[in-house]
Length: 221
Image 1 (cartoon, rainbow, N blue to C red):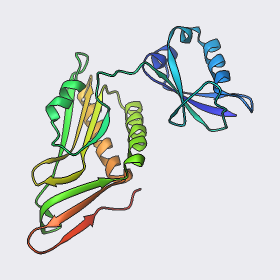
Image 2: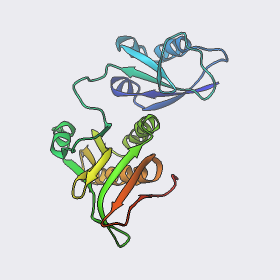
Image 3: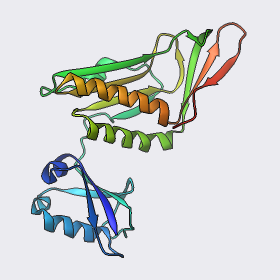
């Protein structure tokens, strides 16, 4: 059976790749995968890590099936905010930029999606957002992983408002740091385009006057 293995941080640097397809015999467990990876690269013996199987932490005795996705998760940084999060409060782009930038980055691109006072010729007084949060979080984790794989970028932070958002306030902020400006711009555009197409976040417009309210958007693609 074939297992897709994901590497992050120090483990990714050790193997030189972010993903690897590993073939194991039927009935294998995570401990068998652990032995094989350490036999292939003894440097892994020096790195503490835990396993996650199909996006949930797992013990070494966890059985594997064909097509499973296994991640090796080394030490995580408790000092940094999550890459994606919802908030009911106003979003501070400057705070996200401070976390995103590093001295190796020559570009810092920030996109701020601001609520506007009209839609399709109708005056809008407020917007409100809700989301299928339990589904959004793993989807966003996957989306940001794929964007990092596709573009030469550093840190990425995305914040999205939930609840009522007044006209002129930021409903979403995306910050991308990169050694060069091109990948940073491209990554921001891809993140926004895919959020609009794929992520179950729902928007309700309250129209000005006595025109009522309406949910707006398109079915996910």
